[in-house]
Image (tube, helix red, strand yellow):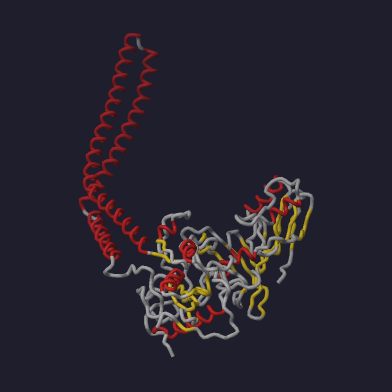
Length: 561
């Protein structure tokens, strides 16, 4: 039996009932092909039993060191002899190495100690140490302290003199007014001139003070600038060397495609919205797999990527779960590398409902509520115009204003509130902003939840590498709060009610799936769990105050699951 580490091409045993796909996997939204599932199982068996390397994936409580889960990729390929097998790759580095037996190599090895990158990195580190030494110098600290002290003393002394001038002016005015009542005209004129001279004297003193401190501060700044200049020169040198090193690194990543054409990182990203490649571009598993396949004459058949290890703190990642390639780094790269291959159409575009009958659940002369089907847009998208909003514009041709008071995710079904006039829309939207509208969602979770009720408080922001996915971020995330109550547990599934306090994008989906939330994805969640026939999440109840009648309305439309 061939050991995993003996070759980078791993023969694949599979049932004759499994047919080859007609097109290659669309890597950004897919269900893994059965061949990829078999390949992943084979790789996972190796990871569970291997002794070739040491890496703390967070699966062994007794292992020490930083826990780092990892994305692995498998690509089913056909070799030149027509044999089927698979290639395996990991994202980034593993066990502090870019090269491990059995896995495809990196496109460019940044860890090569004899390469220009490591030498350039060492030069930058030397510059950093020189900068740190100069910045820590006692002389520099003293110069900064003297400058700050001079500015503080100048401000205090000038402020005190201005206060004295104000008080003296008030005293002179009082003396002048009093003297005018009792003095002769000549005597008063003499006093007036004396007081004026005093005023001029105070103004001259202020002018001198400002000049004196300006000179002193300038001298302190000159001393500081002389000490700061070598630091600034080193920082400019560091920035130039870093930019040059980065450019040279980008040029080393030469990506092939099925036509045999090559582009480097800068070429790949030049026509994107972000011409500067994000950090780590080209280090993901998918580009490594394509590159090795093309370089060695393998025909790509299908591909899948899975997470191995403990869940990270921010993203939703489940051990052994399949995930799409990242968008920000891999989409431009794979867009080039897949040229020449027949690739599946984007399944998400095929899953969108182009036609849907909207069931009106409640309607009066001011507003209505409709039941939005799953996989149907609330508002028109960049590519697809058909939506609840477009249908409402047809249904209510005389209505004015934005119509939709709120939105639902495309995959979520349930109640949407529609206002027939701008005035009603503003009134209803105000209720949403003030959070006086009560919303109840029903969902099916993939597992049996032990906690019967509670609150989830995990701040969310968009995942910049994988839009539109969201991640937990305590530093930059917006507050996101969800209350929940378990309704029933049956056949390994939990029926649950969600009561969102806030309304962040994908809030309920992330709060359900994240390891710090319920750690139990909603059934059918193609972003944070496992895709099925649909996302089992439904907005089934809305409670709000009618803008005209002032009646509190509770409208319910039960979930179809």
